[in-house]
Image 1 (cartoon, rainbow, N blue to C red):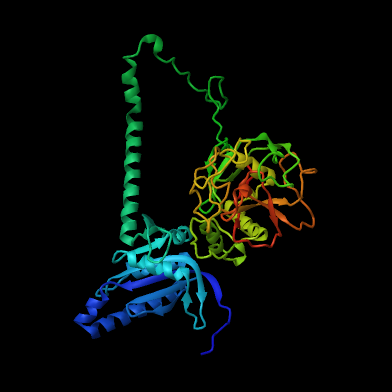
Image 2 (spheres, rainbow, N blue to C red):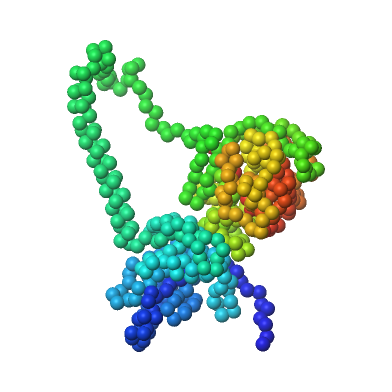
Length: 482
């Protein structure tokens, strides 16, 4: 037997698994009738898949596997399959996931993306579709998207529990909308009643007020268009957004959650006495930082995959090393890759606000007002950060620092804007990034899941070429305030 050593294509795909409920019992009762129903169901599923830009790539008697180029297309197909079932069709259940797949020589698909979709289908109730958080995050912008959280569930042969959601049927969507509009109608009716009776209630209440507490008579307004001194001027021009320290916000549905940091002055770098200190962490100096916003969490696979689904990130799908995607920090992205994500993110947000933090801004955020080696003190423990581990943790698995930022120490190293220079002799003191026309290496900070504790220190520095994709390096974004 000759072994096929041809390298297989790996791509990101939206996978839908469909299973017939009670197929064995149906076959035992009437094998020919069961076969006819399966053939009719298969024909309908293939037609629906093709209509939504997908394909049927595998069957297993009572099951069907479908591939789609986007989660939105997959969602449309699932809703058609469930909501438009003809009379007499056997009951089905559906699972869906977005993940990496391996394309075989026969154009079949294998891999984590297929496995998760199949396991989710096994957990779905008859007549329903259960999907992963990755699928939901990439399909939620669809006009017909409606989901109900079903909690974290363990999947067979998959180490991590998966956050799951049920796709709401057409009837369930109608009921949800009806309830929403009914609530709005009641609120509007109450407001209208209150507005109608307000003058009567006000006049009635005046008889119970002491004379000195009754309001002065209101002067009649001038009718020539001029404003009297007593009349207030109401500014109808919307005011610009204001940001205060600690304020959290998001600019769009797929934009990361941001935290506003106050401006201030801090001492950047490490003292010679700090354990684990590198020679490139000095000389220490005071740096002035202007207010800015920074991501509350590291950018996740789900957020990167949303960029892919939106046609961004240069079509690059970083592998998840079998650890899972979703809420885990994206890894294996180069500094150059990050720039393509920022381009897409700024298109979504409608401006040029998003960027990488400068090295000074990053250390300022990581310290969160502290001067020790870590935001938590002179030492860090496994309950405070992910390090000396075999894989990443989901973002936010440990407590945040004093400025509500998660995973500034450990989990993944985080790219910053600066070009690497081996000391701070000529570094800016205004928080700006170090730039160079021919930059050989860029800085990343914070240490990764496999690093030793000293690499996680707030002052520790690492660097790599702009095109280097490291399995322990990801990023978080910063944002210039309006």
